[in-house]
Structure formats: C-alpha cells, structure tokens
Image (cartoon, rainbow, N blue to C red):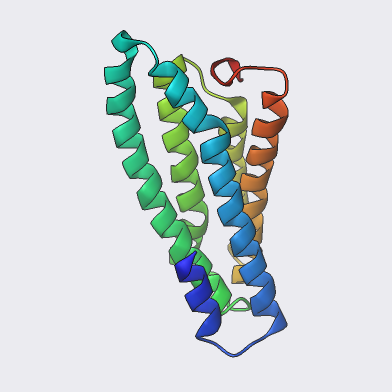
Length: 173
C-alpha cells in the first residue's frame, strides 16, 4: 500500500496514473480477499486438531514466506505501472506483474493441498490465465499488464466468495 501511494505521489498528476493507482488498489483488495476469505479459514480449521497442527504450521510458514515474496514482486510491478503507465512492458515487469500473483496463488495451492488434500479449481484456472495473459499483454503498456493480472485476482476472490455461500472452508473446491 505504501509503495503504491509513494509511486503515485512522486510523479505529476495524470489521469492514466490515477487509473493505474485505482487498479493497484483493487489488486491489493483482491489479494487480501483471496488470503482472508479462504486461506486463513482453511488453516484455522485444519490446525484445530492437535495431530494436524504441526503440519499446518510447517506448511503455513513456508507458504507464507512465498506469499510475502510474491507481494513484494507485485508491489514493484505496480509501482512501475503507476509511475509510468503508458510505457511498454519489459520482461522484468511482466515477470513481476504476472509472476508475483502466480507465486501468491501457487503458495495457496501448496498450502490447501497439504492442509485439506485438494486444490481449489479457481487457483489452477487463475494460474493458467496468468500465464496466457503474460504472453498476450507483453507487447502492451504497463497499465494493461496490471489490469490483466488484477482481473485474474478479482475473479479468484469472486470465486472464493461464491463458493463460500454453500460450503464450509475445508470443503471448498
């Protein structure tokens, strides 16, 4: 959040930069939702029994480390797009913008597989979508890249919310 705001305030005001800031903020909300709507509940439920608590703690520590590293990459990509939204995407930007969300979701895949024995389909579909969109948006402007990766994360957050209406966290699929 701080990196996003700082990137916006360092450059002169432009409507395109404001739009990039809004996309970056939406991405942060989607990331928060993807973590707290599903992953936290799964971890808490899986760790409720003493025999599972150690394994959940072990996998939770490793996947949380991957998530934090992913968030750093996402923040750097967002910072680039907010500072210069109309610039052409570079390989580094594409890796950060799509690899960060992919790593975030992959960490969730690893954790849920270990905690409850299955992987939510939304995560697998999102990983495929991120790979495709990374290739499709690579010749386009930075703002298009963060908009595409944000759309995938928003879709995952919506899928989590829709799945939660009828199922307990450990039974989500």
